[in-house]
Amino acid sequence: METANPLHDIAVFLKRLQWTALALGALWLLWVLAPILTPFAFAALLGWLGDPLVDRLQRAGRSRNVAVTLVFSAMTLALILVLVLLVPAIERQIAILVESFPSYREWFMQTALPWVEARSGLEITSWLDFQRLSELIRSNWERAGGFATTLLGYLSRSGFALIALVANIALLPVLAFFFLRDWDVFVERVAALVPRKYLPTVTRLARESDAMLGGFLRGQFLVMLILGVMYGVGLWLVGLDLGILIGIIAGLFTFIPYLGPASGIILGVIAALVQYGDWKHVAGVLAVFGIGQVIESYWLTPKLVGDRIGLHPVAVIFAVLAGGQLFGFLGMLLALPVAAVANVLLRFAQERYTHSKLYAGERPGIVVAHTHPQPPAAYPREPEAE
Image (cartoon, rainbow, N blue to C red; front, side, top):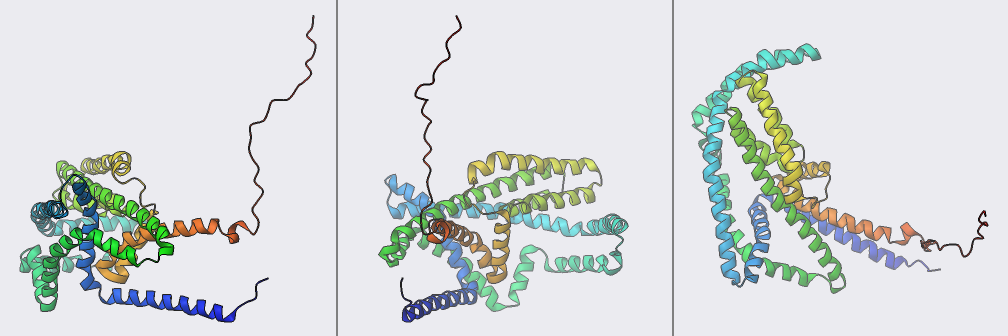
């Protein structure tokens, strides 16, 4: 029987305390530097997503610099194209929403709230002043003159905030290019710091995390893009003035399970009732999202995403909300990568636990070999009747 060593126990405790203090200090530093780290995190994410394509071009015979230039140019052109197409469309849709806000207010006051009050017994109208809210939004929007002017007007009140925003926007393409060019170098330097004893385990976990999260993010981005276009075009064909805006919102929220289609259906049904007031257009909205969900469930998600992240929808929602609450936009940006890595680590811990003595016991269990039964040696046969 081994004797207890107090000095060894104290050393182990101090070592664990040291690592805990280091982790808490890193979290505190991340919380303090979150506004500054946001462009770095986003650029690192772009570099990580584009690195497999750069490696593929290298294997095809191109140099690293040429491959990085081609991929970076393609990513930049795609981003510019999205901004050129989306920003004017979103601004027009928001302008339409502001102009039609009195119609929505009247529908809420005359139709929706009386229906809710009649079935719930609550008096909601008495403490909601929709008239004042409508006039406030309308006057502020008209004074600002549009979405872009509103944003710039808000930022101009704080010179530091405006300078920080411009600096982050200017830094993003530069940082993304360097992350894309030197991604393999960064990986090699990090791998060189790992103790040799744990290198095989860390390499295995890193590859699993990379394969799981990389496939999920690339596939999920395509799913969001395709569904946003489908929902927007479908609601526009139904005749909704705000169809494109609702489709974009539903497509963006697709990465949170059930929230994307639910938000799109609710907003689409309300828009159809306010604009037309009949069930024919409501049925059209439901048909658009029904067809979109069928396509997503049976073709888009299985083919483009699959079950690569392995997280429960509740865990995804919690990770995004918790990241946003703790670290703002940076936390929301890093929520899914951190959750995916944590999921891989938990699976590894479960695997180690099921092979430990605590789970299996000191002695191995009795293993019964399952073999095919042999036919009986010789059964006496009954004499045949003559």
